Amino acid sequence: MVYLDTSVLLVYTLTHSTEVERSRAVDRLFAKISSGLVVAATSFYALHELYVFALENAPDFDTGCSFGKAALEKILQLPLRILPFSSRTERRRLAGRFVALKDASDIPHAVSAHIARCEAIVAYDHHFRAIADVIPYKTPEDYL
Image (cartoon, rainbow, N blue to C red):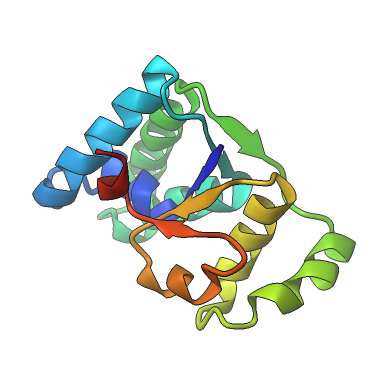
């Protein structure tokens, strides 16, 4: 099972038309997920970030809510495992393994992926390379 980071979910949903090159690879990855060739998970962290992105990039709150809901619906229709928020104890216990991440907001994603024993984090956030010794970093292009 692989962990899908917010950066991949965004391309699949909200930024699909503006990220044409990435969209091709992401669409192929999600086709493999839909057919069962790739088993994938994401987390409530990623879903929350996806929704907040819609709110922050919409012209008004109501439009943001509408776009965010549509993005969540598109993701939740897929055969993905949705990982829960990690407990405070788990985050504290495992956070030290991921101190190499420059963006602290990515640590919960790494912790969730690690707890679920994901074989890779699939993302466009290249700084996940810093923890490749713990969880390999891949991009959607690696699954073409």
